Length: 420
Image (cartoon, rainbow, N blue to C red; front, top):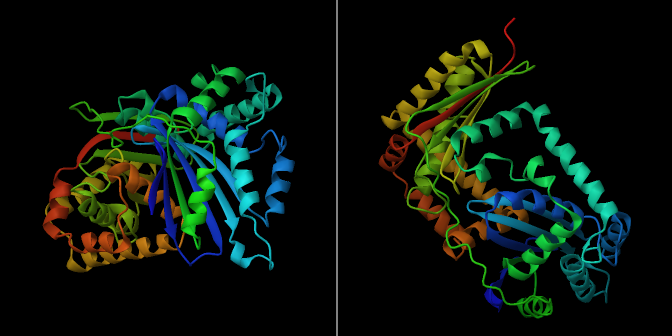
């Protein structure tokens, strides 16, 4: 069931009897802006811990406990060409509460309080809370260099993407955060609440009419903010971009970024999933079996797809001295798939692995709703389990070979220790 609550505000209900909880997610979407990544991340941290009625994290936690252990959090992220702000509420289903208990009204009250009543003073966020959470986020930025795997992934992004909004972490960076003030952050909040396109996704054993009635009571207003195209096609230089850094690391990180034509739910999406599975997505993949197991060159070796931007990433942990050999063997594995050099058993095992992963995600409300939202923003409708599995089963070996042949290496990055 999908219903327009207000212009630019839609409700999507997915009835399910699998769970004893009701999951309600509010997705606020606006066009991607580099400066907004930091401010929205800070906003999520503040809105996670306080409201006007519940001004401390302890009081907000007590309110959730009074709702039989309800749960709430907020997050800010980047999705293709959009900034996304998400509120996630989880409530026990009334059917499993003590006889006569009906928490609908209280659940609705909490959602409205969290969404529409952040703790402010004189049209800006409370400085004490603002300063504390800003300091915490700065410390999080500063700690990125301590996580070498994350640091290497971000350096690879800087080489692969030309747009700064995609080069930095989705939580933003210190440079932009330092410009944020209590008043400017409140203005960002107002812009989000009043102008962002909103999709509300509900999953659980619920009465659809009651959910609709409850959501209609929330004080949303009409808005026209639209992100017409969510998928992002990066521009690249013709030549391969190669870089390296030396830090105090015991294990070198050697990462590669490839341009593909694999975009979410587009023509090459399902062949692309199979290609990635064969290349480095599973324990039976070519990277795992040849780079890690056969040649013993890597502590780990895998590939992953970012289908909102068409990027395929290879991540390995190696001895820095073996970089050239590792690179050659990785390219050999790609060439093998491009030549159709993979067995029927590997092909069908990959299909089975993807199928099992999809079935497992059906049992996770969080994974289900995240995927459903991606379906909605990309093609404006949900892809059912049967539709997804049928399309996967239709993938041919020839389609996988074609996708592999269209894959181009664009960036290479090595983080290694100093030579002994």
